[in-house]
Length: 119
Image (cartoon, rainbow, N blue to C red; front, side, top):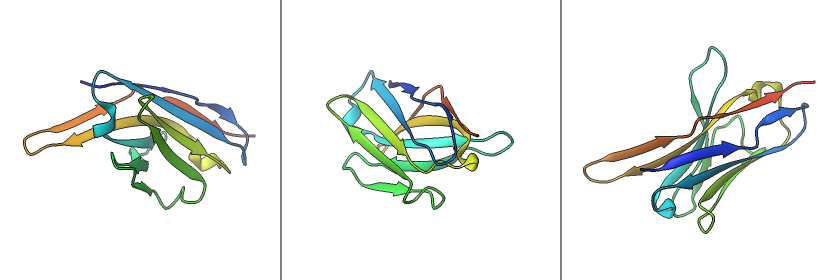
């Protein structure tokens, strides 16, 4: 079992920056792939960025060059650094931990943190 707690959301002006954090507890953090997803009102949840247990990353096209995902296994924390924020980045951002074994998919979610980009 993994518990995830996001923090760092808030209101920011267009062009501004925010850093989201997701603190994990309850299991061996380093073996999980971690991801940030977001869901805007009336839209489906979408993948923003992901990082594997080995440190490989991938990003949604809409955030490439603006967002950076990273992890600190010593602190059991994954981060999402967001630059050049746009109004369309407004959403609830969710942290995800995922591990697939031969028999089981382990899939955990945080409660979400609101990011609002507005002047």
